Length: 456
Ligand SMILES: Nc1ncnc2c1ncn2[C@@H]1O[C@H](COP(=O)(O)OP(=O)(O)OP(=O)(O)O)[C@@H](O)[C@H]1O
Ligand SMILES: [Mg+2]
Image (cartoon, rainbow, N blue to C red; front, top):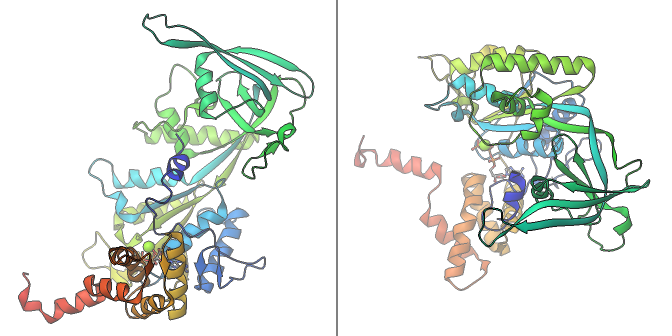
C-alpha cells in the first residue's frame, strides 16, 4: 500500500499545518529568497538548513546532528519538513516526536532504534530476469467459477509485450493480473515483470503515444531495446527498517534479496538485535561488493526535550556507530531539567555532552509583515478568502501572541464568516473569534491574576 496515494484523495478535507511548504526556497547560491517555496522570512535558518542539505547530499554528514532551537511557532518544524522536501523521496526522512518513545508495549530504546533504521537507506542494484516491453495486448481470460456459483474468475492473463526487437505473448498467473491492475497498466504502457517474483513495475507511457494525449503528468519512456525476455539492472531503494521487517519472518529459505518484494506489509513482528546484526552484516557485504550503496537519510526528532536521560545516552552512542543517519532535533525549550534526572538542568533539556556535538540553528520570532504573509499563504492553501483589513488585524494579534495562534484562528474565522452569510473573512470575524479563543499567553496571565479562584 502506498501512503501517498491514499492521502491525495482527501485533498481539501483535512489539511495539516505544513502543507504549504514545498522546499527551502533558496536561490542557486544558497541565499534565501524572502518568500519562496512556501516559506517566508527566517532567512538565516533557511540558509543554514540549505548547507545541511548540501552536506547530506554529498554524504559528508552521516552520524552528525543538528538542533533547531527557537521560541514556539517560529518555524522549526516547518524548516525541518522543508529539508525533507529538498532531499526528495530518494533520501529517507523519518520524522518522530520525542514523546513517541514512551509506550507501554515497546522499550524506549527500541522505538528509537526502529526510527534510526527507518532513516538509513540502501540503494541496491540488482540484475534481474525480466520481461519488458510496451503492452500491446492485455486480456484476462475468464472461466466459470470452479467452486460453483454464478461468478466468473480469471484463470490467466494474456499479455503482449513489444520491444524494438520483437514481440512476445505471455500467459500469466491471475495473481499477476492483480498487480497489473494495481499499477494501473493499460495497453501502450511500458512495463517490466520480474520473472522470479512476478512483481510488475510500470515505467511510463510509451513514446509512441506521446502525441496522443497532452497530459503533462504522464511520463513518456522510449520503447525498450533488446529482447522481451532479458536480464535487466534494477535499482531499488529500501531502508534498513524495511529489511528488518521483511526478514523478521522469513518464509522457507528465501534469501534477503527475494524478500524485498514483500516489503511494506504492515504486520507487527518482532525484530531482535540479533536479526539487525545479521542484516548489517549482509548489508556491509553488499556494500563491499558494490551491489548496494548506503544512503544516510535524516531522523527528525521534534520536541526533543521530551526524551529522557536514558534515551539521550542511547542516542549518543548510536550516533557513534558506523551506520548512522543525520539527526535533526528541534525544541522550543530554554534551560530546563533533563527528563529522568532529579535536578540536572541543561540548555534545551539536552545533556551537555550531546549538546556539544550539535550544530545549532536558531529560529527567530517573525515581524508583523512576515506574519501577514504566512497567514495569507495558509489562507490560500486552505482555500479561504481574507480581506486586507482582516489580515492586518491578524498581523496585529500575531505580534502580541504567536504565529501558530493566528494561523489557527483562520478556520474558526472562516466559520463565523459563513454563519454571517459571507465567503470572505472580514475584520469583525477575526475580532469575534479572537475574543472567543484565548492564546496561551493571555490564558497564563489570567491564571496568575485569578490564582485564588482555581483549584490547586
Ligand atoms: N517561515 C515560514 N514560512 C511559512 N510558514 C511558516 C513559517 N514558519 C512557520 N510557518 C507555519 O506556521 C505554523 C507554526 O510553525 P511551526 O509549527 O513550524 O513552529 P515551531 O517552531 O515548530 O513551533 P513549536 O516550537 O511550537 O513546535 C506552521 O503551520 C508552519 O507551517
Ligand atoms: Mg514544532
